[in-house]
Amino acid sequence: MSESVDRGPPTRSIALYLIGLCLLLPAAAAAAITVTGADHQSITLAAPARRIVSLAPDLTELVYDAGAGAALVGASSYSDYPQAAKKLLRIGDAFRFDLERVLALRPDLVLAWQSGTPVTAIERMRALGLPVLVIGSQQLTDIARNLELIGKVTGHEAQAKTAAREFLAGLASLRQEYAGRPPVRVFYEISSRPLYTVGGRQIISRMIELCGGRNIFSELKVPAATVSMGAVLARDPQAVITGGDDQAAARLKAWHRWPMVSAVRTHSLFSISNDLLARATPRILQGGKQLCEDLEKARESRLANSE
Image (cartoon, rainbow, N blue to C red; front, side, top):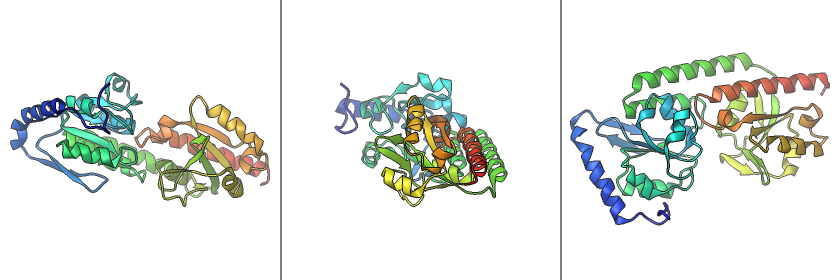
């Protein structure tokens, strides 16, 4: 079994990585590229990245959106969009990956996920000389910023800026369409056992706000947390949204045990694909559009039931 990030790679893998890195250095005389990640740590590349390892599906997708998909040599599990991403070598999942395999790929850039990649893993990669750029998204507009950041480190600034502008335009259009709508109390259910939801700084919560919704657990400072059903019932959501997977129908059906909840009384129980709403990429506009339409249905149902 390959060494995991928790135990340290064999000396041979480190040596191979360092040799490979040296082979990439002749082009270093060109203009260096310095960028700062979401963790406020800066990295400097001697030239645009040509061998990238992505440690989260969102980041893989952003690289393709920025026009640099051809530079990807490895990615985490569930990196399945676009189609080409399915062919990339897997290095583990977003929370635990094979460091030996990462080193063997000789990356000149590793993209880490601020909310998922363990800080200890990031520190270890940096200690081994890997340039790690941490990407994070707390605001919807951060998606555009991340596109431009990836465009800069890969030499695809023009295409990345175009993608960023198109995303911001779509975001502004969606915001304008649903501005001023009556607020809807929303509970977003990640899982039912345990009952898990998103905090106010999570990207899904930001989209709920854009659609005129109010995350009933917006005061939570962490991206996600477990909550009690009692706390949910006390806040009486007017709409319940759950991630669209093979368990979504069962999760929504289970809500009928609570007929006193406003969302149940008005049949305002919805599911939206995780890929479209939980990933901080331009495709979130598709999930956002569905979310806004679902919350509009909740408003109409509430009016029809004279709530």
